[in-house]
Image (cartoon, rainbow, N blue to C red):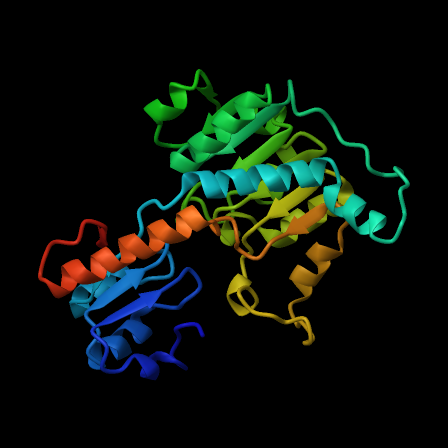
Length: 299
């Protein structure tokens, strides 16, 4: 059950509330939580774009997050999406289950020697880049803030124009901010190398989904692998197999044979879950004991 104005009353009387990426913690919800006695919002995730930090500060509600839980889990999932899209693993799997062993339409390309652009060179981006180097790829990066760890891999930063011109694969690993909202849009897709593959395991709103659909229809974009979706809050983490999905955009996306959508599971490994639990519980314990919060987020 997600946190929203419809469910916030359930938290009444609890000093701490633990939330995830698609829970809504805007000013209205935070005010209701505060009235109910909540003084700590413990995020089981790294991103905090769903929290109104200014409102939290004004209300005296502290916010803590999990700064990093497993860069490997998300980076490896991004690689899994890339391999599956490129080598049509999802299509081959469905065929062989019906005793269809035809190879028609299953041609991919060697990753070795191809140019892979990493947009966002934090911890996850660096792990992804390292894996791609292991495949023999030419890795380039883009980030307004350069990373010594990224450069230590022997790779270089490139301009958005160069990424569009050269990248065979673009993988997004940046946070969602006003500056990165729809960083992939009609204009950037127009400048992209025709047939490039796009991977997004970060935040759904980094891409303009409608623009991506048009690029897929025209063949400008060769394939898409996403673990996040701009309107995922009403869909993900639920079993909707017996319901009619009213979201025509996601329905159109999953109709493409060269698109794979997973339901925000990139983080879902034993190692990552253990770190999330340990870090979140420590934040709650420290708050209860009046200690400083190591992973506090402020406006």
